[in-house]
Length: 172
Image (cartoon, rainbow, N blue to C red; front, side, top):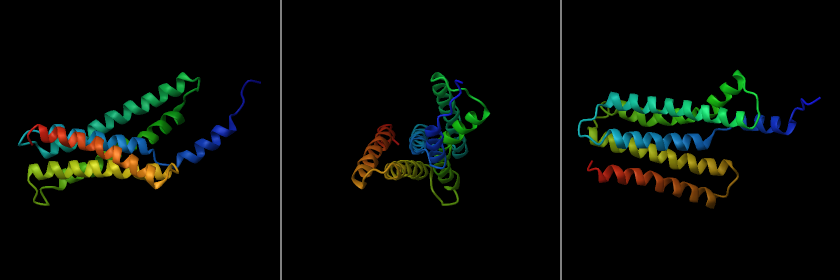
């Protein structure tokens, strides 16, 4: 019979199912920072539209990454069923979740008495901070040393600061 179950793969899959996909949450944070930077370059950006844009962009990228994961698995001969589709969506879900905190900052900024410029900078700071934090935690969970985790956090800080610099260069 040619239907051999790859037991070593099943054990690995069970072990990784409960783990957060740190790459997805880091990527989602970088995506949220990009949306904030780009959408807040005008002096009167509407908060509701920025929140919706962040969440919709996160959803679209979540779908794209889930689809890419499925296509990649199919290309190595794995049969795909609904359970694989659900699992791909679950693994990539942190892309969308990473937009929630920066979006909440934008949504709650009027309650906090923040103007548009302060709102944009605070939301951008939150997105970059969570990107750096998740990169650091992800490295530690991958059994990296604190030194390696710090380096990964620093690399992500540089990526976030590139977006911050682009926003600053646009005059806002």
